Amino acid sequence: MPFCPRRCPYCDFYSTDAFVKVGEYLDALEREAVLYAPKISWPDSGAVPDSESGPGSGSVPFLEPGPVSGSVPFLEPAPVSGAGLISRPAPESGAGLLSSPGPVYGEEPISEPGSLSETWPHLGSGPILETGARSWEGPFGSLYLGGGSPSSLDAASIAAVFKILERFILSPGAEVTIEANPQDATGEMIRLWRDLGVTRISLGVQSFDARGLKEALGRLHGASEAFAAAEAVSRSGAELSLDLIYGWNGQSLADWERDLRLAVNLSPGHVSAYCLTPAPGTRLAEMLASGEMPPLPDEGLLAEMFLAAGVILETAGIRRYEVSNFARQGRECQHNLRYWRRTPYLGLGPSAHSFDLATRRGNLASLSGWARALREGGSPLAFSEAIGPREARLETIMLGLRLSEGLEAGELATEPALEEFVRDGYIFREGGRLVPTEKGMLHADYLARRLA
Image (tube, rainbow, N blue to C red):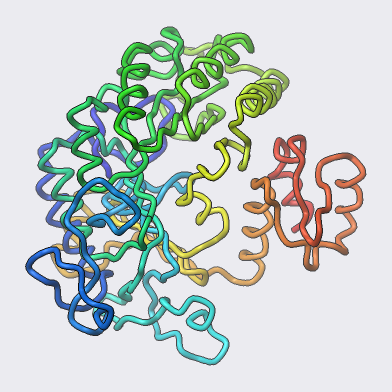
């Protein structure tokens, strides 16, 4: 969802502080949801249809909003920064992202023998709309409300988002995540999110260091608010995930280790530890280039910080399962795993991205432009790119080498560079898979370029 009270200096996601446009956003989100939702009629009340019901039968599985307990909660938009459903690490800022065994927009029917529709039955099962959009029948395995700062929306607005997303079908027990700023995660708001069906709350803590939070990262909250929010999330029964950032200017290895230990003390099921990156066009990049901000830590210190995260978190039972993500057994972020495993996903909202195995598409990175296109019956897309065999191979290798599960060896087993990487301790073989070591994860992009 695109709304955020203030852009952090390192943020390169699309966002806006024009909260006066929330009504315009909700109107456009509903229009976009209509484009991609199953083309079936909806009941007036939340009744679960009998076993004969389903797509094409005139109704859909639907439950009244309420604390999730394994059945489908209301279902709404999801991740990223717009209105849709999906989660990091995509450069999306739409309204939300839904990951699914289902498709996203297609220009033409997919029905030839051996096509994607056979591998992913939900792809291409809906009618082609005038805009070139294809309906996604679902069910979706996860929903992610990202941003922007979705937690900055008031109760009525966030409830409206969920109401709009009821058009989509979530699988029983689907993971439903909302990204939240600590200062927004009050007991009252957490109860609301839980009542709407949120099962997982990702807190943007970033650091517990006052100097890092205010001077380096430009955050609005303090450490005390982060502690209070984390404890409130845990009391609510929602899955607690903490986002941390390392590598800010002036941070020492000891500072980072302290942040990690404080995070462990909050007993999260999941921790994301991202290295601060001065993306082009950000305020951070400008301040570094002008000398307004002192240089960031060198690569040697960053490597030590990367390894320290593994030692401290894994000692606490929070295992690295992706380069920047750690979780207790069985508590990995299912939404993001679908990204890294190249599962189709649908994104809604300005700047949101979608992927259907053959095509990647992105919405306009402008709330006004995206909303206007939908209001006038046009396409909200900024781009659409086909993914050929070479691109798909590179993506599979790059994403697979970021995961502790690795990837199928396949034809890579005969790559000349592979023996070198195994010998030097970057990769090991396990069954028919190639699995990166922690040293290998530190250099995942380099390994992928060599192997691809």
